[in-house]
Image 1: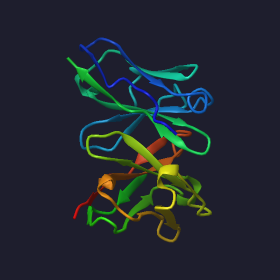
Image 2: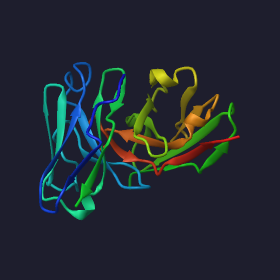
Image 3: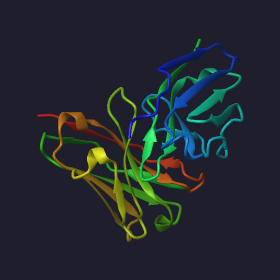
Image 4: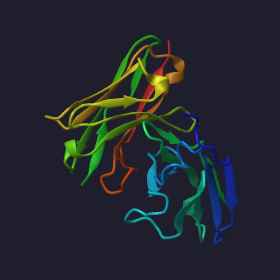
Length: 109
Length: 120
């Protein structure tokens, strides 16, 4: 199972919106609406931000939203804030396994 | 509160084995699957496998087949991940993560991570 493809880095100014893509295949992202997204600050454990493609866990800001089209899932962060600077990983159920994305470093300019 | 507490950092020599523990609390241990994920220094997240704490059944990523063993002890609500034949490339932070307690099909609770260093 190959890792899902994400851009290595995305940047934006405070208040702007950014979108991170996550491209898989018809065996993972394309077959299941079970993509999740994780935020990871340096030296910390990942934190769940989006599950089942577009749902937010309790306590996660509504500035974070998720969507999917075909084999590509996306995470959008609106109203970018300094605290959003972190690494972001997508993850997809793939039947008998689970696969993570390559990770995207988000920089707030 | 729901939490996962992992064992401390380990330093191992190449060829040795390491066993990392993950103690769950605050929820019904046998009701939710547990996964193991690792992250090499400066690298991304890598899924290793899953264990059903209820019956003990497991499924491992193909990459780790034959080298990883996941077990559980229901009396202490603890899961274990043992990795054998260690090599330098296994140097990483190893996380346990619960699956689906508050969010379906997602890793909603993570342990603090256990650093495993493989060095001669």
